[in-house]
Image 1 (cartoon, rainbow, N blue to C red):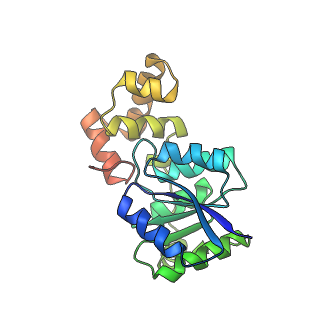
Image 2: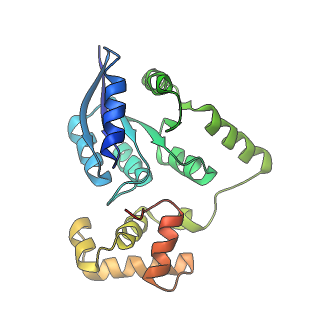
Length: 214
């Protein structure tokens, strides 16, 4: 039986490279791809692939929140994050969102195939460098608290979309909310993060990897 895979990465050249590598394995079949986090959630729901290979930094919805929504709608779908981010907060937050694997983009190509087979078999997969980060975090007693972790999923969505330059009306239409509700979420998240302006919020989102400059 083939393993069906959805690719979600906002860089087309990355998707093409991953698809080419996966094509070398007869039992792997790419059933869809997208460069948009929100579309990744919809495709995962409609296509029900075995695996979603997910980037973290994507427009409209970052990979962490996309992972959370994929798992909420299709718990059986496994998510493997393929990212350039090695920082502890990205790894721990992504795993908490429901990802089954975390792989760095500079890993050897064969590691992704290994990760897919491991996750399909029901086991988690972390690349060696990621394991080192988590072990170091445990040894130093590091804990995630406050900041991004203090925000609700909806507040995180509003933060990313605001940082990407969308206005209140655009966010309301995209999230199927009223303008007043969007404004309330924005005020609340800025209070939690002790931010005073949309510019501050944008800088925070970029620094945390929630949004990008492109």
